[in-house]
Image (cartoon, rainbow, N blue to C red; front, top):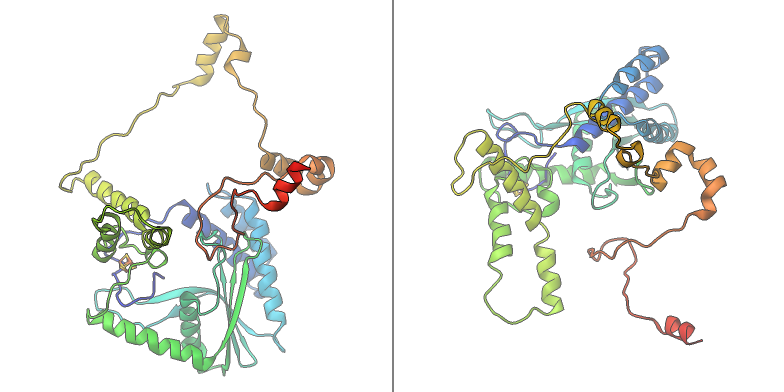
Length: 381
Ligand code: SF4
């Protein structure tokens, strides 16, 4: 679901332009779902069915063997979460939850809803677990007051409240590709329902067209209107070009503030360019712009035949082929982590990465290239 703020672009109006990583995420989700079904509903979905379904997934272009390990980590998490219940909880896998109670929809719009990866209910506890295959650019996604998770929990509560008593709501996000990829949080049912009232209020305003747009990098990142939204365009143009005309130099304080406010400018520009290019290619007019063919590149029609001809004519194979070592990560992958560590682990060093600018909230330690007193003293000695 896109950012939770006071307006709601219709899903139908804008194409879903999610890229390869989203498709990869979908594939990993399918695999995770199969494994969870096999574990919790082994009678209906036994080992043979699981093996056949996984075989099919493996045929997909984006398949990566690593997905097996990552989805096992997710499965281990939901198994242990289920075991924490005093008696076996009710389990729903990939459950579509309806949000009509909180987010009404216009007659020509899709109904608001979402799919919760795993719901466990029992002993007055509702536990919603979300599997995230992606590596968020901001690091681990936090479950605490996470709007997407709370919305799934609201939907799950509405779906099951007649059957189960709920007093506590547990939220977990499992991101197995990150080393610290599990985030958990718990709140009371009252807190969840308070959030539900807030969502409803904002959704009602949006339906009436009275809400305010609040563009921000995180809010707009996955919004389908991100390349065309006027509020986002205005905000970014203002930040990029109308920063004031005073010719004085910015102080570090001001520089920091502008960088913070303007962090979405480059992304917005590229989103807007994508939309304009798509329209130009579709034959629509975008005044001042047109689509052109990018720089082409040469390729063989038949490389084997070309190389054979060259060698027949005295060009040595050693000139035509390059012998390149695999990267360290590739060697580790083909040799296996354990053997790699045993055989060549001591020959690996960690080189520091290139300095990069990051926001203060980033978990990495701040660095400088200023020589410390200890280093200077060491050198003198
Ligand atoms: S781009 Fe941002 S501000 Fe505009 S509709 Fe989408 S989420 Fe809202």
